[in-house]
Length: 88
Length: 300
Image 1 (cartoon, rainbow over the protein chains, first blue to last red):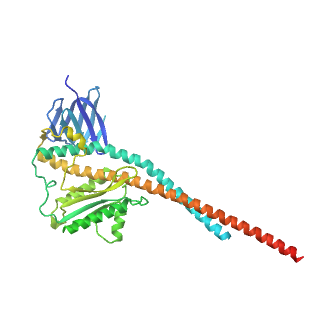
Image 2: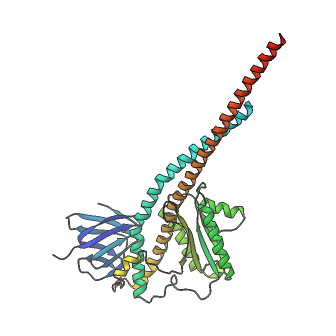
Image 3: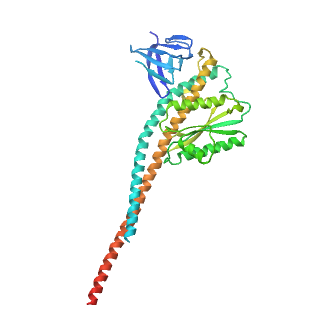
């Protein structure tokens, strides 16, 4: 299996979640995007919606990240939103 | 003589009550510094992520965004002043106001008009006492800033920045706030917010990979930058507010500690004086009794 992604979900006043994940699915202004390890560097604007993270621990978490953006580089995914929160 | 003793006792009591207040405020501030510092630390990943992203877009696209480009004619400058809501924090607010005045002086000497945005009741009080105008002011909650306030301020300044000169727009935005250096040091900081000079927060981290990867932008670089810059401005303002809050608590703790120490000294000095006065009173009473007894004895 490919190297896992390092994911962090960050809101204005705290880091909400960080850890390793196999896949991140987010909704950008242009549509849904799935990110696996080895994805090209990307900076995308998120539209209102959920971000799903499949953690390597088998955990699946869903975060609400309205009005934020997503950056991918070197297998590091950062989801930044002013008021992000974990739904479950 | 009794009167003098009473005066000393009154002074001791008043110093003791003041000390209780200052001691309590010192302890409250001490516990809040921790929290404020944690908030500064907790917001760091956000501002770091945004700074990285903005730097990346700015490096890899030659987008000429109004927020980044220097204007040919700089007529009006806005100063955002971050003070506290409450006093009893030493020179916290006054040093900021002094710094802001100096900056305003400098800008005026360059032929610019200066307008003010105020944060904290202290700044508002300072301006209204001198009957000077400010464009907007925010009070309440400077010791525990919330992001909504930062957003409001950011919206206000960005809007003013985008307006034309005739409509009351500004060409430059400066922030003046206290930066929390350590528990004993807070330094007034003057930062030019707009037009943007993007600074990487952690210089050491970037040196390892100075070159930003070639990003793919979705939908495109211009839109991304459009969206990111206001967020960046917000995060800078929020960061200034958090720094200022931490610095405020630290300044207050220091001020209150020295006030408590001064109260201790006062109490000690007055206790000695009071003891002295009491002893004098007793001595005088004894000599009066002895004198009286002598007079009675010799009269017989």
